[in-house]
Image (tube, rainbow, N blue to C red):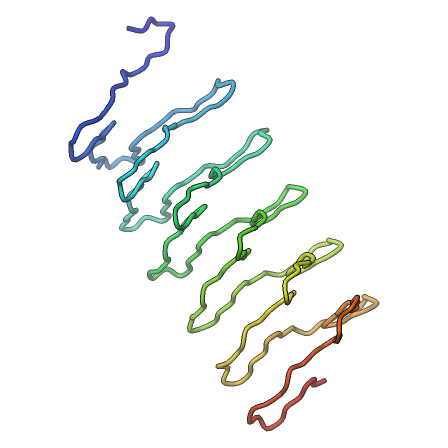
Length: 267
C-alpha cells in the first residue's frame, strides 16, 4: 500500500484469454439530465519535466484482426444539438516553440495505401459541407493554410481533386479576395519547373465540352487600375532556348468544327 507521500497507482493486470470481448475499463450508459456529461473527466496536468500526456497508450500490435484503431469513437447522433464534434481540441496557448492541434507521426506501413488523414464521404441535408475547414490565420510572420512536404513518388500529385458534378456551380479551387499592402499578390504561384521529361506544363487544362452558351478555358474579370504604370491581362516572360527547334510566345491549335465564326485571337 502506498504511503501518503507516494503516488497512488491502480494495480495493473494483463487481460488475455479467448473471451469475446476484453475491456480494461467499462463505463455504463450515462443518462443524467444535468448540464454536462463526461464519460471520462481528467483534471489539469502540470509538473512533467520531459512530457505530459493526459492519455497514453502503448503500441497496438495485431497480425490477424481486420480493423485496428488506437482510438475508436462511435457516431454522434443528436436530436437538436447545436454543434457536434467527433474530436474537439481546445485552444493552444502558452510559450511553446511548436504547437500542433493534432500531430500524426510518419507513416512507414507497407500496406497498399497509407493516409495521413482519411475523411469519409460528406452527405446529408446540411447547408454546407467541408472536408476540412481552417479558420482565419493571423499574427505570425508567415501563415499558410496548408503545407505539403516534398513528393518524390513515381507519380507525384500535390493536390488531387475528384470529379465535380454539382448542379448549380462547380469550382476546382476557390480563392477569396486578395487585398492588403503586400508587395506582391498572387492567386496561384507555381515554382520553377525543371523536370527533364518530354513535356513540361506550367498549367495544363483538359478538354472542355458541354457549355450551352459559352466555354472558356481561362476567363478573367475586368482589370481596373488608376495608378499603376503597366497593366496586362496576360503577361508572358521571354522565351530563351539553347537548342529548341521552334519557339512560340503564344501557340494556338487548329480551329475546327461547325461554328459560324472562328477566331484564333479576338480583340
